[in-house]
Length: 285
Ligand SMILES: C[S@@+](CC[C@H](N)C(=O)[O-])C[C@H]1O[C@@H](n2cnc3c(N)ncnc32)[C@H](O)[C@@H]1O
Image (cartoon, rainbow, N blue to C red; front, side, top):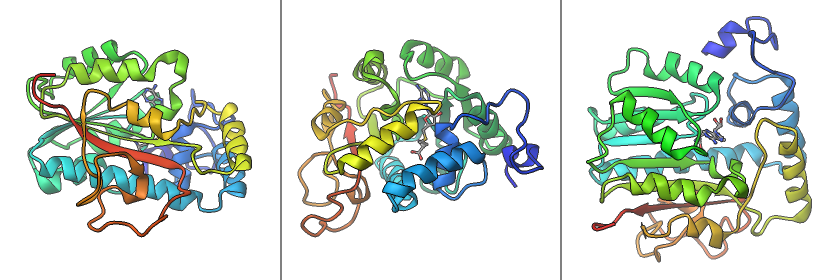
């Protein structure tokens, strides 16, 4: 049983200080992945979304598996420290578990702005696990986030780092300048570092799904800001996008296609509502 589930021994009884009446982005995602750390409001909101997108859980897993494939790929490219921002509630095969299979001494810092996620992650991911830490930090305040990570002392910004931003940037409003936050973060990374990100899109998605998706998150802890392929690609400006599969052009792709061993069939995953990509910071940047 997980920490949040343990505190809530009686189903849907919330620990003090947690607002369970409002759907929470991290807990909704936990529910979509089949986790137990969620409450009725989270499940109702996710089920509302499922009413127009029956493949909701499969899509959430497609994103999670991208996160795992991209993380392992970066580790195999010699990177031995990772910053996972918007890490979410612990689930199966968390970042450090994926990384440590490739490089057992690699260091991982998890960051999230949700205090419940941080509490939970500290108890389940960091406690007793060497080379792993969890910090409370907000992507919309990148300088403060970097200060917090530096103060933690686990990562060395003089060496290449894997910066993981899976399923978080679509919770950052245009007014909060997500591209500026990314520029600040990548400027602090050493050449040879990698950025992996996934992002919800409306490209190829029917209007009723888009409307319902926006409405579901309008009343949640974080609002949804889907972006098109060009905008998601622009998040990688100044970095070298990597081909998503052998022989592919260097570009962002639908999330389930990234990191596959063979080229996909024509039109495969064309209506999947996520883009994903991985890029490398070149020397001299
Ligand atoms: C959908 S979950 C993604 C979990 C994981 N990265 C994955 O893709 O499997 C999004 C997470 O981003 C966090 N988040 C949203 N906005 C954030 C922000 N501005 N700063 C830090 N974390 C944020 C939420 O609290 C939540 O835990």
